[in-house]
Image (cartoon, rainbow, N blue to C red):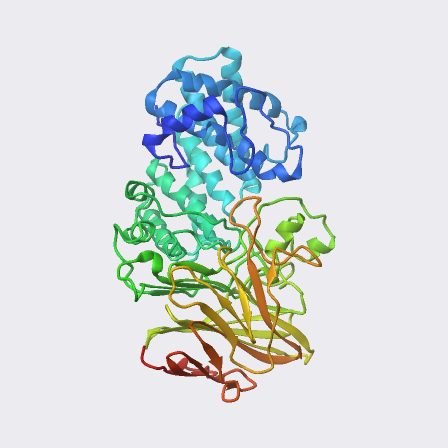
Length: 613
């Protein structure tokens, strides 16, 4: 019998323990209460805040480790434990008119469940468990899932759900090919679909199109386990999957968590060396996930995903050799491929340095409360109505430029793909990225990040409204939740653990006003919140620099590790087009001068003079 295809990649040494604990103490998903599997299963969706939990129940996630350990040990007790739960689901859902949850035949849930149902049916038949009625129900359920997955109308070709549907279809058709009608046809269909989905969902540079590193990880791991389980053996596809993993490695911060752009939780990637070897295939990802303990260091310190729409810098620390955690890390998001998992976050970025996360993205929070079609929230591009989820998606919840308190348009907006332009990769110790978007049909916005790892970062925004309409522009920044914030003259001071100098921030150009600090505020609107995981918001400091009543303008904010910091706003300036700018500031080491040229054609140039440190 074909072994269980374990899409969760449970580590074999721990699978038995997981299974025994679930059977004895119940199954738990994130912050939801334990589910006692010896009692009736709550298949019905009774509350909007249980949507995520109910989805995983209909995937049969609570049976996953138990089925896996049965496959490994052959001990019938694990199968006997699962069988009543499986039969109960079939009884309650074989008639569509009786279904009481939208997740019973959710596209992704059906694909994942098809794999688990197929294994259970095969194993029950081989073990001779159950009576004729039970066997009839199981095989009928298999046929229902085969028929459901064969219909292209049910398959999500353009988002991550489709991969799970293909995995279920491949597992089912491989297992029962030659034993059930139409399974050979289902297998050929699934293989063709897989090729199409990889092309549809990943760019050639390996980046997932859904604006979320966590969904990139999730789909990658599904693809990898499909290979490990023998569902995929095409060498071209396997090479493509390795490229997808290598791309994902760039979205791991020095704390070895995934960047929580878009709908991403603060997902840990790092683990023990044995776990890293088991989980990741490429030497680059093994190096990153292990904090440099194993694998191969990436050949370059920066990566431009020109198609995917991301620019990433990861440079080793200068003060402590071979300290991965103290690496400098900067990632800019300039991607809009569809509305899927897309926040109103154009040109947002994150930054980590000197052993700490500094500027963070908002996170995911959860998918709670469906918006009513035609409502203001629906028209503003929201799929979900919970106020906390709404905040997470807002423009002001991200490190980007906000106009007039209005969110960047998503519903009805034409996706621009990648907003990235020219870049400089480490010349004279500097990294520069230029990105441009058009907002509200008339506002051009160009963001240029100029980064000297371990020392300072300049965020330079230029905007121009072609209709000459004046705007209030706010340049928002959000600190990691463990950091405190103090105001100082026209700037702010952040105490960074394990840094000999605090992080200071000041405006380099005149005419810019700093805001007060925001922290854990609900009224008149939410601000100063961060979501590390499902259904959790924790306070973090937010602040902004702003200009008002301007049809065009420039904002340039300097973040610098300094004991003292002063901007020369008399000397610093930017021309009206924002194509030429110069900045001067002083710290305890002396005077810094930087000149930026963004010609209409040709390359970016940056001239920087700094004191000796």
